Length: 470
Ligand code: C5P
Ligand code: ZN
Image (tube, rainbow, N blue to C red; front, side, top):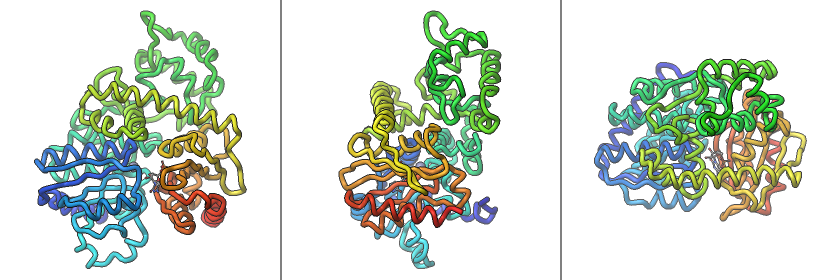
């Protein structure tokens, strides 16, 4: 769904009006999501408010739960600026002075009752879905937040690269092996400011920090046949293509390779793959040349993972400090990253070893109970789906215990979305039918439901999936 010139003009008008609302406010409360996109968005909003000289605070939230709605409605700040959250819950807000820069699928109830009068209620809703675009890949929460920041002051162009981190953190580059649409406008700003370099490269994770043998061994989505998960074969491969793994006693990483070595290795790797996987394995990668070397912050995927490993372990503030360039936060981030790695790999093992993945006709699902954190279960579900160990033809639904019920995460292959699947709508409808709440994107969504309703919930989800997908 390409945006028309009219859509983009309307969006710019709305951005300018929201920018004015921020300038007019004496106090601003920024609320943002705890994932990589949310932390980047929160950092952009934080710096924007700071540069405006406003008294402001930043809070990170896992989701818009009932308490969050109450907190927003009763806050005393002139403006509550909600980033990478909020669109799915607009009809719950009953105060003036709300600015939302989000990309989740908007609340259908709010859309329906939206009239000319409602626009006086003071919700300034900036979301690509309102302008003919798809928020799951055309622009992210940090991207919308950045566009508002730039409408406040064009000098904020130095924050554009943070929106690239957000987009990559939300996997917006995965469908085309490159960012597209409005994300490219953001990219162009980051490039013009000298903060972003675009490489054509293999798209595996860890090109800056992983030892090259591990970079190959842990390659996934797509896998390299013969190399993925096979440590010995990776060493032999390096030998075969004449690349030294170590230099001066230290392992080299993918980015330490000379151009010539990289080309040789890339060609050999792509040759080992089935034709259909090559387009996913090779494409654009985003580099931030101004970040310090060896920190894992020079590559967008690695930067996003650092933020995710902070936010999902109740330490979003460390992620915020990193986005603000405070390198003393790196030590805390490293601790979070180690914990994240450990948790993810034990979570994957737990699901595999206990054969927890169950297949139904139109969905597959697992219940992690209290073994996987509710903030991470979605990442694990996504990894299982792309691991090649299960069917990509049906969505995956995962449960994990949470303080206020059972957390649900749902993920699907994009080809199912092309065939009509909308997980956001399914999570919203099915969770509300069992007394919960939910939303998200077409390809990735979530919900919270009462713990004794899982079976009923799965039945409803399965019905909805079968009726949506042709
Ligand atoms: O938590 P998880 O990673 O599975 O969430 C997937 C997407 O669904 C996220 O973008 C999240 O914001 C959204 N979501 C939501 N409402 C919920 C839970 C998740 O909109 N109750
Ligand atoms: Zn997001």
